[in-house]
Image (tube, rainbow, N blue to C red; front, side, top):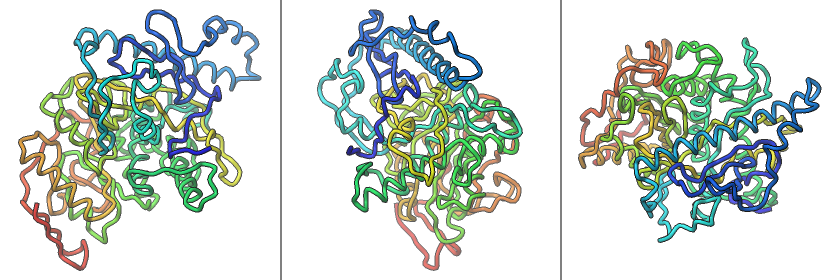
Amino acid sequence: MTVTGDVKPSTDTASAAAASVSESNTSTSIVSAKEGSCTPQVAGTGESGPSQPDKSQHIGERLVGMSSENAPDLALFRNQVVNTLREWYVLASDSIASLLEGRSLQNPAKDLWLLGKHYELGEQVDEQAWEGAGYSAEVLGDFSRLIWCTYRSQYPPIAPSAFTTDAGWGCMLRAGQTLLAQALQLHHFGRDWSFSWDGALDEDVRRRELYTDIVKQFFDDYSSSSTFSIHRMASLGKQFEGKDIGEWFGPYGTAAIIRELARQAAHELSVYTTTDGVVYLADICEHDFKPTLILVASMLGIDRVNPVYYPFIQASLTLPQSAGVAGGRPSSALYFAGFQGDELLYLDPHFTRPAVARRPEDRYSQSDLASYSCNVPRRIALNRLDPCMVFGYYCGTLESLIDLRSRIELLADDGMRTIMSFDNGHAPTATLSAPGTPRSQGGGGSLLKKLPPSCSDSEESAGPRSGSGEVVLEGECSEEEWVTEL
């Protein structure tokens, strides 16, 4: 089978993650899905596309006979029920919001951006294109290449607790994993890539192995290859956010945990974090430049995002360095990868799937990793977002970092309210993220202060600071001084 990097979801009944095509679309809904694929149903009628049996009438039958001997089957069935109920709830609440705000009567925007890539959509949306809401195969293929990290269950307990699932508390950690996964794909593949899963060409084999290695870093255990597992992330919660295992994590703490895990593993990708919006370039370039993921944690309002930041959120997702945004609606984390009009495209971590079993010699099939892919874009309006977010930017080269600064400062020069700025120097020692953290791994702003549950910080971002009109890094960045005029 030939794939284009999307790792198409299998048809196994490993999960019943129901998905809606668009949160603002009240004419159609998706109420049943296997992994990332969907089966449509006309809202309010019960009429579906391909005919399927009524699952509800079999609930009682399936519960009969389930005992401790087949506990995995019971857990799987429970996950299916919870996933479907959640999708019904999200669909109902968002459909009502769409009607009240009048968005359901508006025609969708014809331009779509996905992690720095622009698509011009057709003049009309095909209402029968259930799974993609009329999106082209190119858009759906690109979206399905995003690595999707969701709740998992049936994994080894997260020591010292007895938790074998993160359902109900790990959504922000999963959104952070999803953001990091896109940065790793940018690092290894660039923005456009494809491969044949069963192909024998050297490039297909190389990319398949790289893709598998990326996904394995998010497997749910303490294996040395699971660098960013939920186990390792939750275990650092006490240190960086004062959170016990099983408590909800905020964006700020999640960014700090990702940085610390990358540092501990001496990872090929450096992670730089800032909470005051200032990126200190001398910290990133203290030694020879290393590919870097910049995480900018910001609070863009009180209860909702201040509308003055809408343009920057959208502009951020048009940048070639964009690795997406970890944020969400209030008390419900999401990962944002693009936008269409005033709605963001997102991946939802709130679907519980069984942990992927380890395979001998790491030989994973396409179906083994299918639950890490979703081919159904969903949308949420900007005015429904929680104000606490982490913006991710991948800079694989020094030139890319310079270009990012140039683009951000041009946005500010055009009068846009940005959430980040750049400084040529080092971050003040007092504001390094953790005692003993090397400067090259730290960032502006303290992540150790007491933070409120919704955002992990009670103050708005300090906002942009005025900077020089040129980038000048001296000394330890490299033997050659480099200057670029913006």
